[in-house]
Length: 281
Length: 333
Image (cartoon, rainbow over all chains, first blue to last red; front, side, top):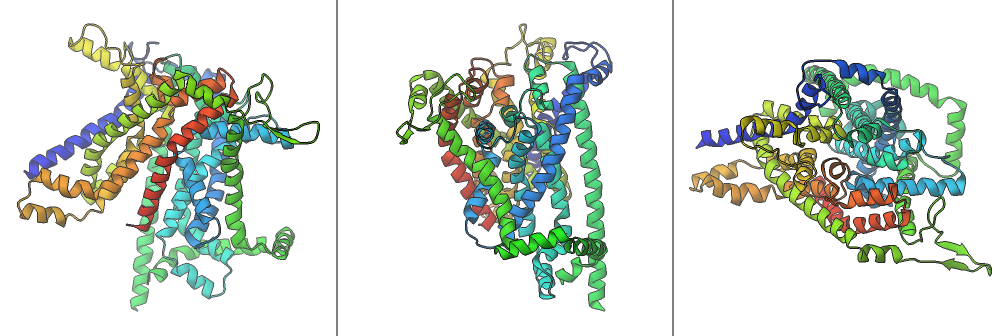
């Protein structure tokens, strides 16, 4: 009986992961296909990678996307940390419920609604105050921050909720000001959560098509917009090459993050042992 | 004890942070700003709340008010392409022109009705498919060894980090007439003519299930993992068959995960644009695609806003349910 159950579980996992990873693998395999037809194998070739790096439109779009993503991630981490701290540490305050729902709503709001509403806001603001002038880098970044700060808030809030606040209280008792306690004690402890929040915001921004299409203007096409306009007409082998490069970068990033986290965990455990030893003496 | 335990590895870094803060605190701009803020009665606490609050008010809440406003205004050929809702007449009387025409238009034209109903149907079916596929996976992960569990979870989350757009694009190559599946079936000799899969409802289901599966698996895993396994042992000892124990114990205990996961899939799926645009054909009407066309092709901002308001109304109840489910989970009940 037990063996049958295990076979079922292993089967579910294997089929599940084939479903999740098969399409990504097919993208990678066919990026080395010589044939223009993408899914008809015509021999091994790396020509599409060469084509990719000659395509000025894709390179420009990638550069714009990277700039937006980096600025967005930084802004989202700052605002998300403030919101997460307020929600997790400040107890009850006026308007807490509103802040809480405003930070979680963008997570599930259909992107067409968020995108349309932000565009209408930017248009209205330009009419009233003359800012932002036109649409492009600034409006895309603001829109992305609004979306991704929700993710950072959730991450920071749940990290702080599981964190023992006795250290913060001890520092407070010893006369440290709240701001200082935050920078010297809280921030270093939640730093890994902030790093993952930054990376998540970065990838979401790099990938967003719908909101970006609404709030971008002529001459400011991001990478997903260029990809979308190309693949709308069907498969295109240089997009496979681009996908392979992106998958490779993400994999490298995840491996590095995994190693760093494992190292930090080891150090933390060693420190715990040292501290425990010191207490015993 | 736990407080002391975390101190040593912090010490090294905190000296640097301390010196940096000391330096910044003594800079004139900082001191001036601080004295002004204290003078106005603004504390650090207020500032921490106010900054994200104002940002979200300005860039999240106010935009909805504007959408509401423009949904009620008339279309005109100009830039921006809508008439103002409020206008001062010559007698300096505030005139408000509420135009419900856009909403009447949505009700009258069957295109919108069909798009709404079709979006609901596609989202509902995809949610059920996600649940049926995601449950066994979440169950298998939750019952795996502790060492395996984290690796498997990581593997579920990993595809989420690669581009959503490119993952949807991958299915074009798999589903199209001379794509992977058809090539394989023809090679096997199962079919003579390639099956038409791209540009059908089937392709949209595959795309949504594929893209949103992690959103279903993670909450299911969370509720299955914290389940008390001795309950199942007790049931087995008392002679209950495994499938009965599953239906009477495991399933009811994971209901929170089922609700949260289903809502996390259903809500974004209703307004999905990328998947129907890439994998569906012109026949597959979904409301996200209609809104997009209304806005980008027809340049009819008021109708696009009206579509957005109607879509939001449709999703208000599921979103409220989701927030309640998440609040319940945060309380740990």
